[in-house]
Length: 422
Image (cartoon, rainbow, N blue to C red; front, side):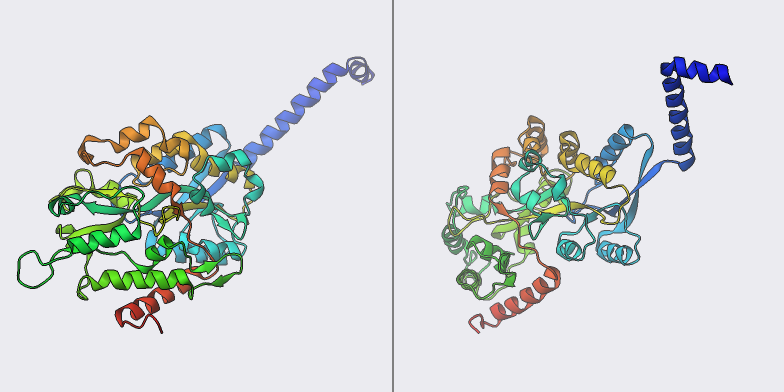
């Protein structure tokens, strides 16, 4: 025993190496006994944008593989197969039961309620100034609630104005410029709305599905004041928006123009999401929709060019406030949201657009948009970047979803009954 003690006393390096070996061995045995760390991910099945898509999880699977390769002792499993229509109820139930996944997609309409109830981890401390600048501002702001960030954006889907080019050409009208206004919009609608076969019935129309919410944004208004935390329905912008919608609808002699009318080539303008454009522009889906006329998309009109008139939908990932592995979950979130290779895969395989400016200005993205079967009127990066630059996040507040449904019903009733003033 004395010899052993003397050896460690005289040779401290030997002792240190042996102690380190024992420590590492013990840690290895402990980790193996504990098994891999499991990160649970919650997803709904299908496209975020309600369009056909057989490759909806390609980018997510690639991100998981990249994360697991960097963390051999971590396994990501996801709750999948939940229909999108059932996902909100599933998510709410899992949170109430304390069984929420570590990371989950958040429906935009549910985001504010979940953030306000403490279900989501505050991500603001994780975000650096450089990280924030890599996103389109409206994409990042979709995860902001009352000054803090509770979700990261994954994919964007801006609403654009689809234009029947053949109809405009027939009437001797040019495609509107990227800075067109509501006045330009109305004048074109007025010019194309007519009876084309002489039977006394209007059978060609200016627009469909252009509603009060789009008009309100075009006038620079919102339904909610974030600073005062109150609804702002009785504003000059709202009155102007409703007056514009009334005037637009009056062109049609009270006929409710539908998307079916647009499909048949009878309508000049139809608001359409980027996901719809990317689904129905190329083969094979264009054979079922919009194949009988030439069409393209431009940005939405605004009352003034300086106003941001584009609504944008954003899919979000949020971290559970109850997760036991916040740093690991954050790393997986950043791969999904900030990794350019993953975001490029999303552009290539999905129908929306990346939340990163660098990806949306890449040559690979332009090549994807320039696929031969999209035709000569395919979108350019310049147009998409302009659309995103002119986009804004609709104010989110607690119970936003139910309040918006009520407002929409009452306002549409007032428009139908010509009782907007009251």
